[in-house]
Image 1 (cartoon, rainbow, N blue to C red):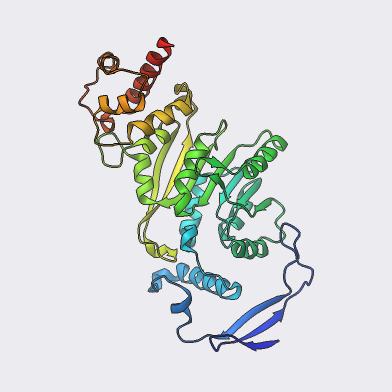
Image 2: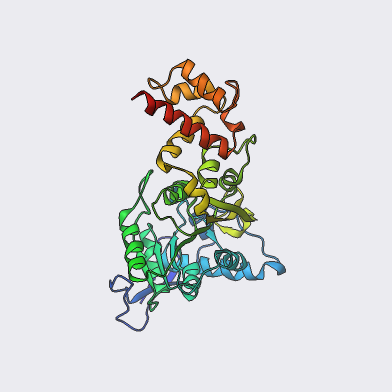
Length: 360
């Protein structure tokens, strides 16, 4: 079947076998596929908002992936959506590094957030026992369903990974739990090129689970990775640093330039690896309590400790009581939260709550 598009381009609608193909949910796939063969001169300028990538001889691997992505997007009529934080990693070597650093075992269950075109997913299913991959965009979900057709050890969920900012989607967690109960010898891991706009809440909420992933290997904004590995006294040090470091060992594996993504983001990215550390995690007596405490301590970064504590425990601790607590911890009232390391922050949290409990 032949036709003409609104922009003057010609296209062919071709039927492709087999005619009874279905996606992973059992929904029949369309037997028709649009193939464009004469695009208007300014098509890419009007459809995509990214800057063109200069291809050199050394970029041959990247070039092949760029061509593949553009072809697949053209066929499916997809435009990357900035509001969903979509930036597709198109360097195959970096995709392999992401998966290699995850150190997947044949018994592992993997959670991938942001299926995209299914390129990384295809590699994950070769290394893991089972992959649960979550995609919010309906067009990408359909596209990935075609790419993953026939893969028996993958579950595709057309869902938002987040129920809200402070809670993960229970449907996703239920599927992970079902697989863990079916395979009690398995561990689960997060491996993903995370959407930029939800990377932080996804990771912080995963850490808050009773049984968090054994590891998280992700591509995220470099500035978020910097905050996770930051040391006391630095501009990046804050509640995220403490929340991650009180439960896991964290490293920045590789810094990624904007040119390896489609479309190009305005910032640098990084592959970051978190490894669960049960010894650290067990040191925190009440995770929810500590999380609330450190967020309050960095709510106003430039405030002194005394002021921060009085605000955090308003109506519960008086100024003399706060001063007594600080003195018992060997801390000055004129210090700031960013000067305290993890151990000092844990002790201060415990001392404050102990003082509140003693009054009740």
